[in-house]
Image (cartoon, rainbow, N blue to C red; front, side, top):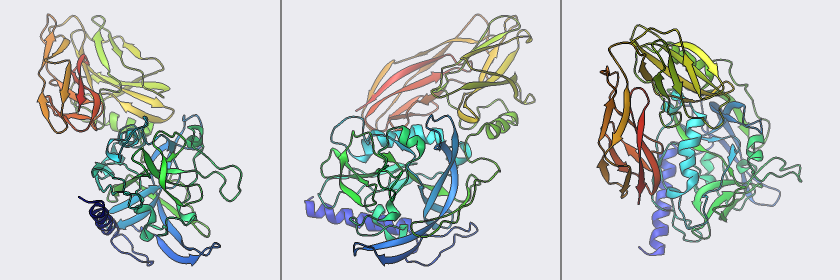
Length: 490
Protein backbone atom coordinates (compact mmCIF):
# COMPACT_ATOMS: atom_id res chain seq x y z
CA UNK A 1 0.00 0.00 0.00
CA UNK A 2 1.30 3.49 -0.82
CA UNK A 3 1.89 6.06 1.90
CA UNK A 4 -1.04 8.11 0.54
CA UNK A 5 -3.23 5.02 0.67
CA UNK A 6 -2.19 4.27 4.23
CA UNK A 7 -2.94 7.82 5.29
CA UNK A 8 -6.39 7.64 3.73
CA UNK A 9 -7.04 4.30 5.44
CA UNK A 10 -5.90 5.69 8.77
CA UNK A 11 -8.15 8.74 8.35
CA UNK A 12 -11.16 6.54 7.56
CA UNK A 13 -10.41 4.37 10.60
CA UNK A 14 -10.24 7.46 12.77
CA UNK A 15 -13.64 8.58 11.50
CA UNK A 16 -15.10 5.12 12.15
CA UNK A 17 -13.57 5.13 15.63
CA UNK A 18 -15.10 8.50 16.50
CA UNK A 19 -18.50 7.47 15.17
CA UNK A 20 -18.33 4.22 17.15
CA UNK A 21 -17.34 5.89 20.39
CA UNK A 22 -19.43 9.06 20.19
CA UNK A 23 -23.16 8.54 19.57
CA UNK A 24 -24.04 12.22 19.23
CA UNK A 25 -21.83 15.14 18.17
CA UNK A 26 -22.48 18.71 19.22
CA UNK A 27 -22.79 20.79 22.34
CA UNK A 28 -26.16 19.65 23.60
CA UNK A 29 -26.49 17.49 26.70
CA UNK A 30 -27.31 13.85 25.93
CA UNK A 31 -28.28 11.81 29.00
CA UNK A 32 -27.55 8.11 29.31
CA UNK A 33 -30.63 6.06 29.94
CA UNK A 34 -31.11 5.47 33.68
CA UNK A 35 -27.58 6.65 34.56
CA UNK A 36 -27.82 10.46 34.61
CA UNK A 37 -24.50 11.01 32.82
CA UNK A 38 -24.03 13.21 29.78
CA UNK A 39 -21.58 13.78 26.97
CA UNK A 40 -19.16 16.71 27.42
CA UNK A 41 -20.71 20.17 27.10
CA UNK A 42 -18.48 21.98 24.58
CA UNK A 43 -18.44 25.60 23.41
CA UNK A 44 -16.08 27.41 21.05
CA UNK A 45 -14.07 30.55 21.72
CA UNK A 46 -10.99 32.37 20.42
CA UNK A 47 -8.11 32.34 22.90
CA UNK A 48 -5.67 35.15 23.68
CA UNK A 49 -3.39 33.98 20.84
CA UNK A 50 -6.24 34.31 18.34
CA UNK A 51 -6.61 30.53 17.93
CA UNK A 52 -9.84 28.55 18.00
CA UNK A 53 -10.13 26.74 21.33
CA UNK A 54 -12.93 24.99 23.23
CA UNK A 55 -14.26 25.22 26.76
CA UNK A 56 -15.61 21.93 28.08
CA UNK A 57 -17.40 20.52 31.10
CA UNK A 58 -17.23 16.78 31.73
CA UNK A 59 -19.32 14.60 34.01
CA UNK A 60 -17.07 12.53 36.27
CA UNK A 61 -17.30 9.18 38.04
CA UNK A 62 -15.40 7.41 40.83
CA UNK A 63 -14.09 4.02 39.72
CA UNK A 64 -11.23 1.92 41.13
CA UNK A 65 -8.41 2.97 43.46
CA UNK A 66 -4.77 3.93 43.00
CA UNK A 67 -2.07 5.80 44.98
CA UNK A 68 -2.49 9.53 44.40
CA UNK A 69 -1.94 11.95 47.31
CA UNK A 70 0.77 9.81 48.93
CA UNK A 71 4.23 9.84 47.37
CA UNK A 72 5.04 6.51 49.05
CA UNK A 73 2.21 4.63 47.30
CA UNK A 74 0.98 3.22 50.61
CA UNK A 75 -2.47 4.83 50.42
CA UNK A 76 -4.94 3.88 47.70
CA UNK A 77 -7.67 6.38 46.88
CA UNK A 78 -10.67 6.44 44.57
CA UNK A 79 -9.84 7.38 40.98
CA UNK A 80 -11.82 10.18 39.35
CA UNK A 81 -12.53 9.76 35.63
CA UNK A 82 -13.85 12.21 33.03
CA UNK A 83 -16.67 10.90 30.85
CA UNK A 84 -15.60 11.53 27.24
CA UNK A 85 -18.70 9.95 25.74
CA UNK A 86 -21.73 8.03 26.90
CA UNK A 87 -24.19 5.89 24.97
CA UNK A 88 -26.70 3.89 26.96
CA UNK A 89 -24.75 1.53 29.22
CA UNK A 90 -21.38 2.38 27.66
CA UNK A 91 -19.09 5.17 28.86
CA UNK A 92 -15.68 6.09 27.44
CA UNK A 93 -13.65 7.49 30.34
CA UNK A 94 -10.25 9.16 30.86
CA UNK A 95 -8.55 9.62 34.23
CA UNK A 96 -8.94 13.17 35.51
CA UNK A 97 -5.26 13.34 36.51
CA UNK A 98 -2.03 11.68 35.44
CA UNK A 99 -1.78 8.62 37.68
CA UNK A 100 1.74 7.26 37.22
CA UNK A 101 4.98 7.69 35.29
CA UNK A 102 6.33 5.00 32.96
CA UNK A 103 8.34 4.89 29.73
CA UNK A 104 6.36 4.04 26.61
CA UNK A 105 8.81 1.19 26.14
CA UNK A 106 11.65 0.18 28.45
CA UNK A 107 14.08 -0.28 25.55
CA UNK A 108 14.97 2.34 22.95
CA UNK A 109 13.83 0.69 19.74
CA UNK A 110 11.30 0.93 16.93
CA UNK A 111 7.98 0.00 18.52
CA UNK A 112 4.21 0.32 18.14
CA UNK A 113 1.42 0.35 20.71
CA UNK A 114 0.79 -3.37 20.17
CA UNK A 115 4.20 -4.41 21.50
CA UNK A 116 5.21 -1.60 23.87
CA UNK A 117 5.79 -2.32 27.56
CA UNK A 118 3.40 0.44 28.64
CA UNK A 119 0.46 -1.39 27.05
CA UNK A 120 1.46 -4.57 28.90
CA UNK A 121 1.80 -2.68 32.20
CA UNK A 122 -1.62 -1.05 31.85
CA UNK A 123 -3.41 -4.32 31.05
CA UNK A 124 -1.63 -6.33 33.73
CA UNK A 125 -0.05 -4.45 36.63
CA UNK A 126 -2.30 -1.38 36.65
CA UNK A 127 -5.44 -3.39 35.85
CA UNK A 128 -4.82 -5.81 38.72
CA UNK A 129 -3.82 -3.14 41.25
CA UNK A 130 -6.51 -0.54 40.54
CA UNK A 131 -9.63 -2.67 40.19
CA UNK A 132 -11.36 -5.35 42.24
CA UNK A 133 -13.49 -8.13 40.77
CA UNK A 134 -16.64 -6.00 40.52
CA UNK A 135 -14.74 -3.24 38.75
CA UNK A 136 -12.93 -5.67 36.43
CA UNK A 137 -16.24 -7.19 35.36
CA UNK A 138 -17.45 -3.69 34.44
CA UNK A 139 -14.46 -2.90 32.21
CA UNK A 140 -15.13 -3.68 28.57
CA UNK A 141 -12.62 -5.04 26.10
CA UNK A 142 -12.14 -2.25 23.57
CA UNK A 143 -11.27 -2.73 19.91
CA UNK A 144 -8.49 -0.12 19.79
CA UNK A 145 -7.75 1.43 16.39
CA UNK A 146 -4.08 2.33 16.00
CA UNK A 147 -3.86 4.86 13.19
CA UNK A 148 -0.68 5.98 11.48
CA UNK A 149 0.78 9.36 12.39
CA UNK A 150 -0.79 11.30 9.52
CA UNK A 151 1.66 14.20 9.74
CA UNK A 152 4.81 12.11 9.34
CA UNK A 153 3.45 8.89 7.84
CA UNK A 154 4.74 6.67 10.65
CA UNK A 155 2.92 3.36 11.07
CA UNK A 156 0.63 2.95 14.06
CA UNK A 157 0.84 -0.83 13.94
CA UNK A 158 -1.89 -3.41 14.23
CA UNK A 159 -5.19 -2.75 15.97
CA UNK A 160 -5.42 -4.22 19.47
CA UNK A 161 -7.98 -5.44 21.99
CA UNK A 162 -7.39 -3.80 25.37
CA UNK A 163 -9.02 -3.39 28.77
CA UNK A 164 -6.99 -0.24 29.46
CA UNK A 165 -5.28 1.96 26.89
CA UNK A 166 -4.10 5.50 26.11
CA UNK A 167 -5.76 8.09 23.91
CA UNK A 168 -4.58 8.48 20.33
CA UNK A 169 -3.72 11.72 18.52
CA UNK A 170 -7.13 11.56 16.83
CA UNK A 171 -9.01 11.14 20.10
CA UNK A 172 -7.05 13.94 21.79
CA UNK A 173 -8.26 16.36 19.08
CA UNK A 174 -11.91 15.23 18.99
CA UNK A 175 -14.23 18.12 19.80
CA UNK A 176 -17.02 15.84 21.00
CA UNK A 177 -14.68 14.56 23.74
CA UNK A 178 -14.02 18.15 24.89
CA UNK A 179 -10.76 18.82 23.00
CA UNK A 180 -9.96 21.38 20.27
CA UNK A 181 -9.45 19.99 16.78
CA UNK A 182 -6.33 22.10 16.25
CA UNK A 183 -3.39 20.07 17.64
CA UNK A 184 -1.24 23.18 18.09
CA UNK A 185 -3.63 24.98 20.44
CA UNK A 186 -2.27 25.07 24.02
CA UNK A 187 -5.67 24.19 25.39
CA UNK A 188 -6.63 24.02 29.05
CA UNK A 189 -8.96 21.15 28.11
CA UNK A 190 -5.97 18.89 27.36
CA UNK A 191 -3.86 19.88 30.35
CA UNK A 192 -3.63 17.42 33.25
CA UNK A 193 -2.29 17.61 36.79
CA UNK A 194 0.21 15.02 38.00
CA UNK A 195 -0.78 13.31 41.22
CA UNK A 196 1.73 13.48 44.05
CA UNK A 197 2.41 9.79 43.47
CA UNK A 198 3.04 10.28 39.71
CA UNK A 199 5.42 13.12 40.54
CA UNK A 200 7.27 10.87 43.01
CA UNK A 201 7.62 8.26 40.25
CA UNK A 202 9.47 10.83 38.10
CA UNK A 203 6.73 12.59 36.13
CA UNK A 204 7.95 15.92 34.77
CA UNK A 205 5.94 18.52 36.70
CA UNK A 206 5.84 22.29 36.14
CA UNK A 207 6.76 24.33 39.22
CA UNK A 208 7.77 27.68 37.68
CA UNK A 209 4.61 29.09 36.10
CA UNK A 210 1.55 29.49 38.37
CA UNK A 211 -0.74 28.99 35.37
CA UNK A 212 0.62 25.47 34.81
CA UNK A 213 1.79 24.56 38.31
CA UNK A 214 1.56 20.83 39.02
CA UNK A 215 0.75 19.87 35.44
CA UNK A 216 2.69 17.36 33.37
CA UNK A 217 3.32 15.81 29.97
CA UNK A 218 1.34 12.64 29.26
CA UNK A 219 1.72 9.88 26.69
CA UNK A 220 -0.56 9.10 23.77
CA UNK A 221 -0.48 5.68 22.13
CA UNK A 222 0.19 7.06 18.60
CA UNK A 223 3.66 7.02 17.03
CA UNK A 224 5.73 10.19 16.73
CA UNK A 225 8.13 11.58 14.13
CA UNK A 226 10.03 8.28 14.00
CA UNK A 227 9.05 4.72 14.89
CA UNK A 228 11.14 4.96 18.07
CA UNK A 229 9.12 7.95 19.33
CA UNK A 230 5.60 8.15 20.76
CA UNK A 231 3.25 11.12 20.72
CA UNK A 232 2.00 12.93 23.79
CA UNK A 233 0.38 16.03 25.26
CA UNK A 234 2.47 18.87 26.66
CA UNK A 235 2.14 20.63 29.99
CA UNK A 236 0.53 23.50 28.06
CA UNK A 237 -2.07 21.35 26.33
CA UNK A 238 -0.80 21.21 22.75
CA UNK A 239 -0.27 17.87 21.02
CA UNK A 240 3.33 16.72 20.70
CA UNK A 241 2.83 14.75 17.49
CA UNK A 242 6.61 14.60 16.91
CA UNK A 243 6.74 12.63 20.14
CA UNK A 244 9.37 11.76 22.73
CA UNK A 245 11.85 8.88 22.61
CA UNK A 246 9.97 5.81 23.79
CA UNK A 247 12.37 5.08 26.66
CA UNK A 248 11.93 8.52 28.27
CA UNK A 249 10.86 7.97 31.86
CA UNK A 250 9.39 11.37 32.74
CA UNK A 251 6.14 11.36 30.73
CA UNK A 252 3.06 10.52 32.77
CA UNK A 253 0.38 7.86 32.27
CA UNK A 254 -3.25 8.92 31.87
CA UNK A 255 -5.31 5.75 31.33
CA UNK A 256 -8.54 5.44 29.35
CA UNK A 257 -11.11 2.63 29.13
CA UNK A 258 -14.73 1.73 28.41
CA UNK A 259 -17.03 0.84 31.31
CA UNK A 260 -20.41 -0.87 31.48
CA UNK A 261 -22.60 1.59 33.38
CA UNK A 262 -25.08 -1.12 34.37
CA UNK A 263 -22.45 -2.19 36.94
CA UNK A 264 -22.70 -0.91 40.52
CA UNK A 265 -18.90 -0.52 40.72
CA UNK A 266 -18.92 3.22 39.90
CA UNK A 267 -20.51 6.31 41.43
CA UNK A 268 -21.08 9.90 40.36
CA UNK A 269 -18.26 12.39 41.08
CA UNK A 270 -19.66 15.74 39.96
CA UNK A 271 -18.21 17.71 37.05
CA UNK A 272 -14.88 19.16 35.92
CA UNK A 273 -14.58 22.17 33.63
CA UNK A 274 -11.68 23.42 31.54
CA UNK A 275 -13.05 26.96 31.97
CA UNK A 276 -15.15 28.07 34.94
CA UNK A 277 -15.71 26.38 38.30
CA UNK A 278 -16.20 22.68 38.70
CA UNK A 279 -19.13 21.18 40.61
CA UNK A 280 -17.30 18.70 42.86
CA UNK A 281 -18.83 15.80 44.66
CA UNK A 282 -16.98 13.99 47.42
CA UNK A 283 -16.24 10.25 47.22
CA UNK A 284 -19.25 8.31 48.53
CA UNK A 285 -19.05 6.64 51.91
CA UNK A 286 -20.61 3.46 50.56
CA UNK A 287 -18.93 0.30 49.17
CA UNK A 288 -15.66 0.88 47.37
CA UNK A 289 -15.27 0.19 43.67
CA UNK A 290 -11.81 -1.19 44.31
CA UNK A 291 -10.41 -4.13 46.24
CA UNK A 292 -10.58 -2.68 49.75
CA UNK A 293 -10.37 -4.94 52.77
CA UNK A 294 -14.07 -4.80 53.79
CA UNK A 295 -15.37 -5.75 50.33
CA UNK A 296 -12.90 -8.62 49.87
CA UNK A 297 -13.42 -9.91 53.39
CA UNK A 298 -17.19 -9.81 52.99
CA UNK A 299 -16.91 -11.86 49.79
CA UNK A 300 -14.63 -14.43 51.42
CA UNK A 301 -16.67 -14.86 54.61
CA UNK A 302 -19.85 -15.38 52.59
CA UNK A 303 -18.29 -17.63 49.91
CA UNK A 304 -20.71 -20.59 49.50
CA UNK A 305 -18.40 -23.48 48.57
CA UNK A 306 -14.84 -24.82 48.29
CA UNK A 307 -14.21 -23.42 44.81
CA UNK A 308 -11.77 -20.60 44.09
CA UNK A 309 -12.80 -17.04 44.88
CA UNK A 310 -13.53 -14.93 41.79
CA UNK A 311 -10.46 -12.91 40.81
CA UNK A 312 -8.04 -15.05 42.83
CA UNK A 313 -4.56 -15.73 41.48
CA UNK A 314 -1.94 -18.42 41.86
CA UNK A 315 1.14 -16.84 40.28
CA UNK A 316 1.32 -13.76 42.52
CA UNK A 317 1.18 -15.55 45.87
CA UNK A 318 1.95 -19.20 45.04
CA UNK A 319 0.30 -20.23 48.32
CA UNK A 320 1.03 -23.79 49.49
CA UNK A 321 -0.01 -25.91 52.47
CA UNK A 322 1.80 -28.87 54.09
CA UNK A 323 0.86 -30.92 57.19
CA UNK A 324 3.29 -30.47 60.07
CA UNK A 325 1.66 -33.04 62.39
CA UNK A 326 -1.66 -34.65 63.18
CA UNK A 327 -2.94 -31.33 64.47
CA UNK A 328 -1.05 -28.64 62.54
CA UNK A 329 -0.80 -27.27 58.98
CA UNK A 330 1.85 -24.84 57.73
CA UNK A 331 1.02 -22.34 54.99
CA UNK A 332 3.68 -20.56 52.94
CA UNK A 333 3.41 -18.01 50.16
CA UNK A 334 5.44 -15.67 48.01
CA UNK A 335 6.07 -12.08 49.06
CA UNK A 336 3.89 -9.65 47.09
CA UNK A 337 5.49 -6.34 46.15
CA UNK A 338 4.01 -3.50 48.21
CA UNK A 339 2.18 -5.74 50.69
CA UNK A 340 2.37 -4.66 54.34
CA UNK A 341 0.50 -7.66 55.77
CA UNK A 342 -1.21 -10.92 54.83
CA UNK A 343 -4.61 -12.11 56.08
CA UNK A 344 -5.22 -15.86 56.40
CA UNK A 345 -8.75 -17.29 56.15
CA UNK A 346 -9.68 -20.94 56.58
CA UNK A 347 -11.95 -23.72 57.86
CA UNK A 348 -12.59 -27.42 57.36
CA UNK A 349 -13.31 -28.33 53.76
CA UNK A 350 -16.99 -28.64 52.90
CA UNK A 351 -19.79 -26.41 51.63
CA UNK A 352 -21.29 -26.06 55.09
CA UNK A 353 -18.06 -24.65 56.49
CA UNK A 354 -17.72 -20.96 55.57
CA UNK A 355 -14.35 -19.27 55.76
CA UNK A 356 -13.30 -17.66 59.02
CA UNK A 357 -10.63 -15.02 59.51
CA UNK A 358 -7.76 -16.77 61.29
CA UNK A 359 -4.80 -14.43 61.54
CA UNK A 360 -3.03 -11.32 60.17
CA UNK A 361 0.74 -11.74 59.72
CA UNK A 362 3.55 -9.66 58.24
CA UNK A 363 5.71 -12.59 57.08
CA UNK A 364 5.21 -15.20 54.39
CA UNK A 365 4.21 -18.22 56.48
CA UNK A 366 1.72 -19.24 59.14
CA UNK A 367 1.12 -22.45 61.09
CA UNK A 368 -2.35 -23.28 62.36
CA UNK A 369 -2.49 -25.65 65.32
CA UNK A 370 -5.16 -27.54 67.32
CA UNK A 371 -6.67 -29.16 64.22
CA UNK A 372 -8.24 -32.61 63.84
CA UNK A 373 -6.10 -35.48 62.57
CA UNK A 374 -6.67 -36.87 59.07
CA UNK A 375 -8.90 -33.96 58.09
CA UNK A 376 -8.86 -31.67 55.05
CA UNK A 377 -8.75 -27.92 55.65
CA UNK A 378 -9.16 -25.10 53.16
CA UNK A 379 -7.27 -21.78 53.22
CA UNK A 380 -7.00 -18.43 51.47
CA UNK A 381 -4.25 -15.84 51.81
CA UNK A 382 -4.89 -12.17 50.98
CA UNK A 383 -1.98 -9.77 50.41
CA UNK A 384 -2.81 -6.31 51.78
CA UNK A 385 -1.34 -2.82 51.59
CA UNK A 386 -3.11 -0.90 54.35
CA UNK A 387 -6.81 -1.46 53.68
CA UNK A 388 -6.17 -2.32 50.03
CA UNK A 389 -6.24 -5.91 48.76
CA UNK A 390 -3.40 -6.53 46.33
CA UNK A 391 -3.97 -10.23 45.62
CA UNK A 392 -6.10 -13.18 46.76
CA UNK A 393 -4.63 -16.67 46.57
CA UNK A 394 -6.26 -19.70 45.06
CA UNK A 395 -7.99 -21.99 47.54
CA UNK A 396 -5.56 -24.38 49.23
CA UNK A 397 -6.78 -27.85 50.37
CA UNK A 398 -4.46 -29.69 52.73
CA UNK A 399 -4.96 -32.73 54.99
CA UNK A 400 -3.44 -33.15 58.44
CA UNK A 401 -1.47 -36.29 59.26
CA UNK A 402 -2.80 -39.34 61.09
CA UNK A 403 -5.68 -40.30 58.84
CA UNK A 404 -6.44 -42.28 55.71
CA UNK A 405 -6.03 -39.37 53.28
CA UNK A 406 -2.97 -37.42 52.23
CA UNK A 407 -1.62 -34.69 49.95
CA UNK A 408 0.05 -34.33 46.59
CA UNK A 409 3.83 -34.20 46.76
CA UNK A 410 4.76 -33.07 43.28
CA UNK A 411 3.56 -31.84 39.88
CA UNK A 412 5.54 -32.89 36.81
CA UNK A 413 5.19 -31.41 33.33
CA UNK A 414 5.98 -32.82 29.91
CA UNK A 415 8.02 -29.68 29.12
CA UNK A 416 9.98 -27.11 31.12
CA UNK A 417 10.44 -24.74 28.18
CA UNK A 418 8.22 -24.05 25.19
CA UNK A 419 8.65 -21.83 22.15
CA UNK A 420 5.57 -20.83 20.16
CA UNK A 421 4.74 -18.60 17.26
CA UNK A 422 2.08 -15.97 17.79
CA UNK A 423 -1.37 -17.56 17.42
CA UNK A 424 -0.05 -21.13 17.64
CA UNK A 425 -0.90 -23.58 20.43
CA UNK A 426 0.66 -26.54 22.18
CA UNK A 427 -0.77 -28.80 24.88
CA UNK A 428 1.44 -29.63 27.86
CA UNK A 429 0.66 -32.66 30.02
CA UNK A 430 0.76 -32.48 33.83
CA UNK A 431 0.93 -35.37 36.30
CA UNK A 432 0.35 -35.39 40.05
CA UNK A 433 2.47 -37.49 42.39
CA UNK A 434 0.88 -38.31 45.75
CA UNK A 435 2.49 -39.57 48.93
CA UNK A 436 1.76 -42.93 50.52
CA UNK A 437 -1.88 -42.05 51.25
CA UNK A 438 -4.74 -41.55 48.85
CA UNK A 439 -5.54 -37.95 47.94
CA UNK A 440 -9.19 -36.96 48.01
CA UNK A 441 -9.65 -34.69 45.01
CA UNK A 442 -11.07 -31.24 45.68
CA UNK A 443 -9.74 -29.89 42.40
CA UNK A 444 -7.90 -31.21 39.37
CA UNK A 445 -4.60 -29.76 38.24
CA UNK A 446 -5.23 -26.08 37.48
CA UNK A 447 -3.35 -23.77 35.09
CA UNK A 448 -2.47 -20.09 35.07
CA UNK A 449 -0.37 -17.70 32.99
CA UNK A 450 1.50 -14.94 34.78
CA UNK A 451 1.07 -12.72 31.71
CA UNK A 452 -1.91 -13.44 29.47
CA UNK A 453 -0.86 -10.69 27.06
CA UNK A 454 2.09 -12.96 26.11
CA UNK A 455 0.54 -16.45 26.33
CA UNK A 456 -2.67 -17.87 27.69
CA UNK A 457 -3.59 -21.37 28.83
CA UNK A 458 -6.90 -23.22 29.14
CA UNK A 459 -7.97 -25.66 31.85
CA UNK A 460 -6.58 -28.60 29.88
CA UNK A 461 -3.06 -27.20 29.58
CA UNK A 462 -3.37 -25.92 26.00
CA UNK A 463 -0.98 -22.96 25.72
CA UNK A 464 -1.50 -20.34 23.01
CA UNK A 465 0.95 -17.62 22.01
CA UNK A 466 -0.59 -14.14 22.02
CA UNK A 467 2.30 -11.76 21.29
CA UNK A 468 6.08 -11.68 21.27
CA UNK A 469 7.64 -12.04 24.71
CA UNK A 470 8.33 -14.45 27.59
CA UNK A 471 6.14 -15.58 30.48
CA UNK A 472 5.57 -18.51 32.85
CA UNK A 473 2.68 -20.98 32.80
CA UNK A 474 1.94 -22.63 36.15
CA UNK A 475 0.32 -26.02 36.77
CA UNK A 476 -0.65 -26.38 40.43
CA UNK A 477 -2.26 -28.99 42.67
CA UNK A 478 -4.98 -28.42 45.27
CA UNK A 479 -2.43 -28.05 48.08
CA UNK A 480 -0.35 -25.53 46.11
CA UNK A 481 2.60 -27.64 44.94
CA UNK A 482 3.35 -26.64 41.37
CA UNK A 483 5.54 -26.83 38.29
CA UNK A 484 6.01 -24.22 35.60
CA UNK A 485 6.94 -24.00 31.97
CA UNK A 486 8.77 -21.01 30.55
CA UNK A 487 7.03 -19.91 27.34
CA UNK A 488 8.68 -17.81 24.65
CA UNK A 489 6.48 -16.39 21.92
CA UNK A 490 8.20 -15.34 18.70
